[in-house]
Image (cartoon, rainbow, N blue to C red):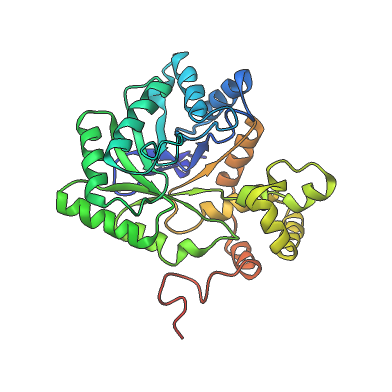
Length: 332
Protein backbone atom coordinates (compact mmCIF):
# COMPACT_ATOMS: atom_id res chain seq x y z
CA UNK A 1 0.00 0.00 0.00
CA UNK A 2 1.25 3.51 -0.87
CA UNK A 3 1.94 5.85 2.02
CA UNK A 4 0.39 8.85 0.26
CA UNK A 5 -2.69 8.65 2.48
CA UNK A 6 -0.40 9.25 5.45
CA UNK A 7 0.63 12.72 4.24
CA UNK A 8 -1.04 16.03 3.43
CA UNK A 9 -0.06 19.61 2.68
CA UNK A 10 -0.70 22.07 5.48
CA UNK A 11 -3.56 24.21 4.24
CA UNK A 12 -2.63 26.30 1.21
CA UNK A 13 1.10 26.04 1.93
CA UNK A 14 3.52 23.67 0.27
CA UNK A 15 4.58 22.15 3.60
CA UNK A 16 4.06 18.38 3.68
CA UNK A 17 3.11 16.92 7.06
CA UNK A 18 2.10 13.50 8.29
CA UNK A 19 -1.63 13.10 8.92
CA UNK A 20 -0.64 11.84 12.36
CA UNK A 21 1.29 14.36 14.41
CA UNK A 22 3.24 13.43 17.50
CA UNK A 23 1.89 15.35 20.49
CA UNK A 24 4.52 15.72 23.20
CA UNK A 25 2.44 16.70 26.22
CA UNK A 26 3.39 13.41 27.91
CA UNK A 27 7.13 14.07 27.58
CA UNK A 28 8.44 15.32 30.87
CA UNK A 29 6.81 13.85 33.94
CA UNK A 30 5.16 10.87 32.24
CA UNK A 31 7.76 9.85 29.65
CA UNK A 32 11.39 10.77 30.25
CA UNK A 33 14.96 9.67 29.58
CA UNK A 34 15.51 6.59 27.44
CA UNK A 35 11.76 6.04 27.12
CA UNK A 36 11.33 9.51 25.60
CA UNK A 37 14.19 8.91 23.16
CA UNK A 38 12.74 5.55 22.11
CA UNK A 39 9.29 7.06 21.60
CA UNK A 40 10.59 9.96 19.50
CA UNK A 41 12.81 7.72 17.38
CA UNK A 42 10.01 5.23 16.82
CA UNK A 43 7.56 7.92 15.73
CA UNK A 44 10.04 9.43 13.30
CA UNK A 45 11.01 6.04 11.88
CA UNK A 46 7.33 5.21 11.38
CA UNK A 47 6.83 8.31 9.25
CA UNK A 48 5.44 10.86 11.72
CA UNK A 49 7.23 14.10 10.88
CA UNK A 50 5.08 16.77 12.55
CA UNK A 51 6.08 17.03 16.23
CA UNK A 52 3.83 19.32 18.26
CA UNK A 53 4.84 20.88 21.58
CA UNK A 54 4.39 24.11 23.56
CA UNK A 55 6.54 26.31 25.75
CA UNK A 56 4.41 25.52 28.82
CA UNK A 57 4.62 21.72 28.38
CA UNK A 58 6.56 19.79 30.98
CA UNK A 59 4.94 21.68 33.85
CA UNK A 60 5.04 18.51 35.98
CA UNK A 61 8.80 19.19 36.16
CA UNK A 62 8.90 22.86 35.08
CA UNK A 63 7.49 24.84 32.19
CA UNK A 64 9.75 24.47 29.17
CA UNK A 65 10.94 21.01 30.16
CA UNK A 66 9.33 19.26 27.17
CA UNK A 67 11.05 21.61 24.74
CA UNK A 68 14.32 20.76 26.51
CA UNK A 69 13.65 17.03 26.08
CA UNK A 70 13.15 17.60 22.37
CA UNK A 71 16.26 19.77 22.20
CA UNK A 72 18.35 17.04 23.82
CA UNK A 73 16.95 14.56 21.30
CA UNK A 74 17.76 16.83 18.34
CA UNK A 75 21.29 17.23 19.71
CA UNK A 76 21.93 13.50 19.35
CA UNK A 77 22.22 14.10 15.59
CA UNK A 78 21.34 11.62 12.90
CA UNK A 79 19.49 14.28 10.87
CA UNK A 80 16.65 14.31 13.38
CA UNK A 81 16.07 18.05 13.28
CA UNK A 82 16.02 18.24 9.49
CA UNK A 83 13.49 15.39 9.27
CA UNK A 84 11.07 16.93 11.77
CA UNK A 85 8.47 19.62 11.09
CA UNK A 86 8.71 21.27 14.49
CA UNK A 87 5.66 23.01 15.92
CA UNK A 88 5.55 24.80 19.25
CA UNK A 89 3.23 27.33 20.86
CA UNK A 90 3.33 30.69 22.57
CA UNK A 91 0.91 32.55 24.80
CA UNK A 92 0.56 30.51 27.97
CA UNK A 93 1.78 31.95 31.28
CA UNK A 94 5.45 31.09 31.82
CA UNK A 95 5.73 32.85 35.19
CA UNK A 96 3.88 35.27 37.45
CA UNK A 97 5.24 38.23 35.47
CA UNK A 98 2.27 39.83 33.65
CA UNK A 99 4.45 40.35 30.55
CA UNK A 100 5.58 36.71 30.52
CA UNK A 101 2.39 35.52 28.84
CA UNK A 102 -0.09 36.47 26.15
CA UNK A 103 0.48 37.67 22.59
CA UNK A 104 2.09 41.08 22.98
CA UNK A 105 4.92 41.67 20.51
CA UNK A 106 7.33 41.79 23.44
CA UNK A 107 6.29 38.38 24.75
CA UNK A 108 5.97 36.65 21.37
CA UNK A 109 9.50 37.62 20.37
CA UNK A 110 11.06 36.88 23.77
CA UNK A 111 9.21 33.56 24.04
CA UNK A 112 10.37 32.51 20.60
CA UNK A 113 14.00 33.20 21.53
CA UNK A 114 13.56 31.15 24.73
CA UNK A 115 11.95 28.25 22.86
CA UNK A 116 14.78 28.22 20.30
CA UNK A 117 17.32 27.96 23.12
CA UNK A 118 15.47 25.10 24.82
CA UNK A 119 14.88 23.27 21.53
CA UNK A 120 18.52 23.76 20.47
CA UNK A 121 17.50 24.78 16.99
CA UNK A 122 17.76 27.83 14.76
CA UNK A 123 14.18 27.78 13.55
CA UNK A 124 10.61 26.75 14.36
CA UNK A 125 8.60 25.39 11.44
CA UNK A 126 5.16 26.20 12.84
CA UNK A 127 4.82 28.79 15.61
CA UNK A 128 1.32 28.59 17.05
CA UNK A 129 -0.66 31.04 19.17
CA UNK A 130 -1.68 28.78 22.05
CA UNK A 131 -4.88 30.70 22.70
CA UNK A 132 -6.36 34.02 21.67
CA UNK A 133 -5.38 37.13 23.61
CA UNK A 134 -8.31 39.55 23.37
CA UNK A 135 -6.16 42.44 24.65
CA UNK A 136 -3.92 42.31 21.58
CA UNK A 137 -4.91 43.26 18.05
CA UNK A 138 -3.88 41.26 15.01
CA UNK A 139 -1.65 44.06 13.71
CA UNK A 140 0.55 43.66 16.78
CA UNK A 141 0.61 39.87 16.47
CA UNK A 142 1.55 40.03 12.80
CA UNK A 143 4.18 42.70 13.46
CA UNK A 144 5.94 40.31 15.83
CA UNK A 145 5.53 37.28 13.59
CA UNK A 146 6.72 39.13 10.49
CA UNK A 147 9.90 40.08 12.35
CA UNK A 148 10.52 36.45 13.37
CA UNK A 149 9.86 35.19 9.84
CA UNK A 150 12.17 37.83 8.34
CA UNK A 151 14.90 36.77 10.77
CA UNK A 152 14.52 33.13 9.70
CA UNK A 153 13.45 32.01 13.17
CA UNK A 154 9.89 31.02 12.17
CA UNK A 155 8.66 29.51 8.90
CA UNK A 156 4.87 29.44 9.35
CA UNK A 157 2.37 30.75 11.89
CA UNK A 158 -0.61 28.85 13.27
CA UNK A 159 -3.40 29.47 15.75
CA UNK A 160 -4.88 27.21 18.40
CA UNK A 161 -8.24 27.27 20.16
CA UNK A 162 -9.47 30.08 17.91
CA UNK A 163 -13.03 30.94 17.03
CA UNK A 164 -14.11 31.06 13.40
CA UNK A 165 -14.22 34.86 13.53
CA UNK A 166 -10.66 34.90 14.94
CA UNK A 167 -9.49 33.06 11.84
CA UNK A 168 -11.33 35.52 9.58
CA UNK A 169 -9.92 38.54 11.45
CA UNK A 170 -6.39 37.11 11.36
CA UNK A 171 -6.52 36.40 7.64
CA UNK A 172 -8.09 39.70 6.65
CA UNK A 173 -5.45 41.60 8.65
CA UNK A 174 -2.68 39.49 7.10
CA UNK A 175 -4.13 40.12 3.63
CA UNK A 176 -4.05 43.86 4.25
CA UNK A 177 -0.42 43.55 5.40
CA UNK A 178 0.34 41.38 2.32
CA UNK A 179 1.56 38.42 4.36
CA UNK A 180 0.64 34.74 4.32
CA UNK A 181 -1.24 34.79 7.61
CA UNK A 182 -2.23 31.58 9.35
CA UNK A 183 -1.10 28.25 7.95
CA UNK A 184 -3.07 26.19 10.47
CA UNK A 185 -5.56 26.15 13.30
CA UNK A 186 -5.34 23.52 16.05
CA UNK A 187 -8.67 22.83 17.72
CA UNK A 188 -10.33 20.43 20.13
CA UNK A 189 -12.49 18.11 18.00
CA UNK A 190 -13.79 14.59 18.55
CA UNK A 191 -17.00 12.57 18.70
CA UNK A 192 -17.95 14.29 21.96
CA UNK A 193 -17.01 17.81 20.81
CA UNK A 194 -18.38 18.55 17.34
CA UNK A 195 -18.81 22.32 17.67
CA UNK A 196 -15.84 23.08 15.33
CA UNK A 197 -18.01 21.81 12.46
CA UNK A 198 -20.18 24.93 12.86
CA UNK A 199 -17.68 27.77 12.38
CA UNK A 200 -14.01 26.87 12.93
CA UNK A 201 -13.55 24.22 10.25
CA UNK A 202 -15.64 26.08 7.63
CA UNK A 203 -13.64 29.27 8.27
CA UNK A 204 -10.35 27.39 8.04
CA UNK A 205 -11.37 25.75 4.76
CA UNK A 206 -12.56 29.06 3.30
CA UNK A 207 -9.22 30.73 4.05
CA UNK A 208 -7.01 27.77 3.10
CA UNK A 209 -5.96 27.14 6.70
CA UNK A 210 -5.00 23.59 7.67
CA UNK A 211 -6.84 22.02 10.60
CA UNK A 212 -4.92 20.14 13.27
CA UNK A 213 -6.94 18.33 15.94
CA UNK A 214 -5.91 17.97 19.55
CA UNK A 215 -7.42 15.53 22.07
CA UNK A 216 -9.12 13.40 19.39
CA UNK A 217 -10.06 10.87 22.10
CA UNK A 218 -11.15 13.51 24.61
CA UNK A 219 -8.38 12.77 27.06
CA UNK A 220 -8.96 9.01 26.91
CA UNK A 221 -12.75 8.97 27.34
CA UNK A 222 -13.09 7.56 23.81
CA UNK A 223 -10.18 5.15 24.22
CA UNK A 224 -12.05 2.61 26.31
CA UNK A 225 -12.09 5.00 29.23
CA UNK A 226 -15.22 3.63 30.85
CA UNK A 227 -13.96 0.07 30.80
CA UNK A 228 -10.54 1.07 32.10
CA UNK A 229 -12.05 3.14 34.88
CA UNK A 230 -14.13 0.20 36.01
CA UNK A 231 -11.21 -2.26 36.01
CA UNK A 232 -8.80 0.22 37.62
CA UNK A 233 -6.37 0.53 34.69
CA UNK A 234 -7.27 4.09 33.63
CA UNK A 235 -4.44 6.64 33.43
CA UNK A 236 -5.50 9.82 31.58
CA UNK A 237 -9.16 8.79 31.34
CA UNK A 238 -9.54 8.96 35.12
CA UNK A 239 -8.89 12.71 35.25
CA UNK A 240 -9.64 16.04 33.62
CA UNK A 241 -12.00 16.38 30.68
CA UNK A 242 -12.18 12.62 30.28
CA UNK A 243 -13.49 12.06 33.80
CA UNK A 244 -16.06 14.83 33.27
CA UNK A 245 -17.19 13.25 29.99
CA UNK A 246 -17.47 9.79 31.54
CA UNK A 247 -19.71 11.25 34.22
CA UNK A 248 -21.83 13.31 31.83
CA UNK A 249 -22.03 10.98 28.81
CA UNK A 250 -21.38 7.58 30.34
CA UNK A 251 -24.37 5.92 28.63
CA UNK A 252 -23.25 7.00 25.16
CA UNK A 253 -19.65 6.03 25.83
CA UNK A 254 -20.76 2.63 27.08
CA UNK A 255 -22.79 2.17 23.89
CA UNK A 256 -19.71 3.22 21.89
CA UNK A 257 -17.49 0.68 23.62
CA UNK A 258 -20.04 -2.09 22.93
CA UNK A 259 -20.21 -0.97 19.31
CA UNK A 260 -16.42 -1.14 18.98
CA UNK A 261 -16.48 -4.69 20.36
CA UNK A 262 -19.13 -5.59 17.80
CA UNK A 263 -17.13 -4.33 14.80
CA UNK A 264 -13.84 -5.64 16.20
CA UNK A 265 -12.10 -2.26 16.57
CA UNK A 266 -10.23 -0.89 19.54
CA UNK A 267 -12.10 2.21 20.81
CA UNK A 268 -9.01 4.39 20.49
CA UNK A 269 -8.45 3.31 16.89
CA UNK A 270 -12.11 3.84 15.97
CA UNK A 271 -12.18 7.30 17.55
CA UNK A 272 -9.00 8.35 15.74
CA UNK A 273 -10.26 6.93 12.46
CA UNK A 274 -13.44 8.99 12.77
CA UNK A 275 -11.53 12.26 13.24
CA UNK A 276 -9.07 11.45 10.46
CA UNK A 277 -11.98 10.89 8.10
CA UNK A 278 -13.67 14.23 8.78
CA UNK A 279 -13.79 16.82 5.97
CA UNK A 280 -11.25 19.59 6.39
CA UNK A 281 -9.02 17.80 8.91
CA UNK A 282 -5.37 17.91 7.88
CA UNK A 283 -3.80 16.00 10.75
CA UNK A 284 -4.56 14.61 14.19
CA UNK A 285 -2.24 15.26 17.13
CA UNK A 286 -1.89 12.12 19.21
CA UNK A 287 -0.21 11.98 22.61
CA UNK A 288 1.30 8.49 22.85
CA UNK A 289 3.21 7.29 25.87
CA UNK A 290 4.70 4.20 24.21
CA UNK A 291 5.78 3.08 20.71
CA UNK A 292 2.82 0.68 20.75
CA UNK A 293 0.47 3.68 21.01
CA UNK A 294 2.09 5.13 17.87
CA UNK A 295 1.50 1.87 15.99
CA UNK A 296 -2.13 1.77 17.11
CA UNK A 297 -2.67 5.31 15.82
CA UNK A 298 -1.18 4.33 12.47
CA UNK A 299 -3.60 1.41 12.24
CA UNK A 300 -6.44 3.90 12.64
CA UNK A 301 -5.03 5.93 9.75
CA UNK A 302 -4.52 2.86 7.56
CA UNK A 303 -7.98 1.36 8.19
CA UNK A 304 -10.64 4.06 7.79
CA UNK A 305 -14.21 3.58 8.92
CA UNK A 306 -16.79 2.59 6.35
CA UNK A 307 -19.61 5.01 5.43
CA UNK A 308 -22.04 2.74 7.31
CA UNK A 309 -19.86 2.81 10.44
CA UNK A 310 -19.55 6.59 10.22
CA UNK A 311 -23.34 6.88 9.97
CA UNK A 312 -23.76 4.68 13.03
CA UNK A 313 -21.40 6.95 15.00
CA UNK A 314 -23.45 9.96 13.91
CA UNK A 315 -26.44 8.33 15.55
CA UNK A 316 -24.52 7.72 18.78
CA UNK A 317 -22.83 11.13 18.82
CA UNK A 318 -25.10 13.46 16.83
CA UNK A 319 -23.68 16.63 15.28
CA UNK A 320 -24.81 19.99 16.59
CA UNK A 321 -28.28 20.88 15.32
CA UNK A 322 -28.87 19.50 11.85
CA UNK A 323 -25.15 19.06 11.28
CA UNK A 324 -22.76 20.88 8.99
CA UNK A 325 -21.73 24.49 9.13
CA UNK A 326 -23.55 27.47 10.57
CA UNK A 327 -26.13 28.84 10.09
CA UNK A 328 -27.66 25.91 8.19
CA UNK A 329 -27.08 23.65 11.19
CA UNK A 330 -29.85 25.36 13.11
CA UNK A 331 -32.06 26.89 10.42
CA UNK A 332 -35.42 25.18 9.93
